[in-house]
Length: 262
Image (cartoon, rainbow, N blue to C red; front, top):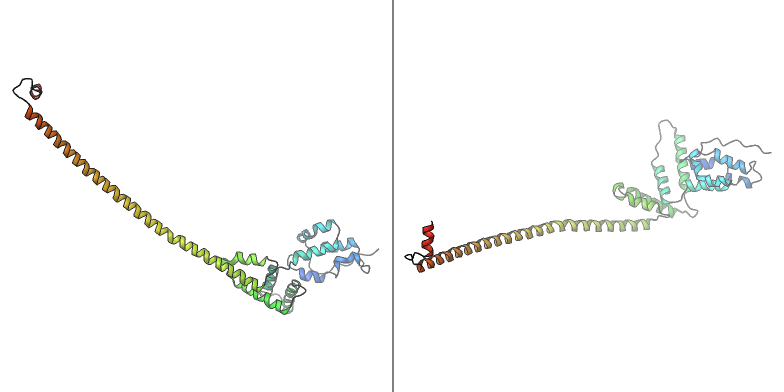
């Protein structure tokens, strides 16, 4: 019966050390069950993977573990930590160029961190990666990094989560974004300009309506005075007519009877 081999003497897999973990883990660990010259059986291969990762990393191969498939477990970890998308490339380059030597590490240790970061970048490249691809990738990353975060955060995120990013596609996306931004600014300016005009027109209409009401009141008031004067004139004329036709010597005269009654 084969004995369980000594576990690798390195840090367990966490969220940031996949590159070094992968190199420190025995080669072909995913295929141990299929290699006759290895001393591990299938269950030992699974145990090796379980014991060399942090607890939070086991979630990546839960389904494969239930099926006892060490090869699938290995692939699941690779897919989780090495998604070959622009976002991962961008983060890897940013980490590389932002590295600083700490006070408590030697130059050799710092150089080791640089090499480990470079390994991460190389692992994200496709098999057909060339120097031309590198130039295109670096130019794209430099352009994205230079965009103001406050204004272009959403655009940068949407571009980084795409499957593939090229300089040509990036320039086209930025041109479209600029056109949309200018159009939105133009629409806002037109709406802002239209508001004072509408307010001025409304004020003018209100002023005209007020003048019209004043004129109507004035005309009605003048008309009322004319009608009142005419009524007084008619009453006076009627009274004068009645007076001229009345006989005050007649004891049955209406005016005389009225006067006597008073």
